[in-house]
Image 1: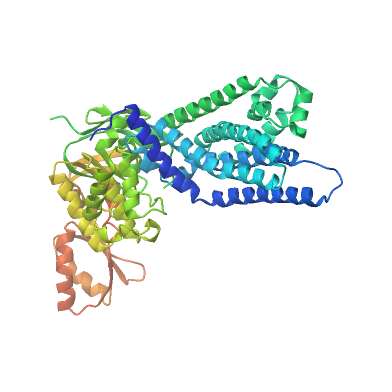
Image 2: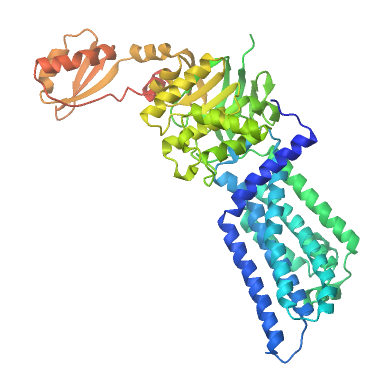
Length: 270
Length: 307
């Protein structure tokens, strides 16, 4: 049976690579680390809920405020970044270090398809680990809250989940790109995520637009300290424009990663 | 008939290091042994053949087509890599199935091919055992199985006998010969001459990234025979043994080491020499302590060839 490069075949190849990658990613040590971060976020939600219930501090705050802060600081700027950094940079580098890349490269599957399949696995596992954390945090914080408030804010939760999905897509494809490109991608990823993104996104002027986080902040539905700061230093990008930019960035990073994978020779140490 | 695999002035370098240097050859159906010491460039050549590396200069074609990024061609190639690397969590059957799906087979075909491949390498019993729990020999065999599972026309086997037990080696040699007889093009690499001899008479001798000789393995053997073969002998009475050996026509010279306990014999017909020696020692009741031959390896042949 000869490989025919139809769309059906391409999708089947993407799915085959995605399943194989999903298995190796899920059973890696990275998952334990991600699980610990998720548990910490859930722990913070429980703490927030207890503070609200027993009024341990005098300043009153609502479940919506705690949830917004949690989403902005712990989920988007920490959990999403770490999940995509760890899994994204590992997509190719783990296969190179484990010397298993050979098995994929001697199959009748175009290398760009391998990259797309791997990125699909990355998004899949990231969604499986991050979205339940958000939903659980929401339920913990709104536990015993006014039902009307709960239902009103469900819309915000849905928006949050959409934003987190876009963030996973953009960061995931970016880290997949540097994983395919660099020999030591984790360090470069950390510098980018907590150096470049952390600093430049708060600088006034055009440079903010050179960060992924700027576009995420632009569509963030909550009002918290970081978004307030972002508003202080300048206009947000229009929501539609921000969403389109995030999707285009993800597509660009994925296309570049595929091109690198196609043209680069990976020398596996004997 | 056009060759299956053809290289023309093929070179590959990594920075300043030349791994393959202006190599030209053509290979048809049957088994060909790629023979060379470690670091000769065998693995690089195999990676060029399997499209994992792009030629720096020259050209390599398989079935008349260039290989690098020519994805449909990979359905016709099976590659058994040298490195002992796997998706360790998978069982043998899962590993084969995952790789077979990449060839576009449906689940029924995948199951059938997994069974056939496992049977070919005699691993049916261990099909549901995790690869992490496989012995070295079993790991080598599952690597072979993934190379043949899709029934490719061209098989590239990088040191396939490394780490195998004697039964596994015997079986592997048998199947490699069968594949060759069935009309497949099998390129098998090794740094051990007798391993290659067991699989094929047809060899490509590679050293320092260059092809030194191409053709029948007997020619290599005769090259060995043309040059005096050094044999070190440690025995109870070296001087007496020397007296006995000096009369034979194939013995070129006899030397003693500084303490006079080891004898170095130079012979032009080592096979006859080895055949004669035990009887000679027995008849004259000379006790043999050690016999070694530093020439009985390829390195010596390469040394002769490049001199």
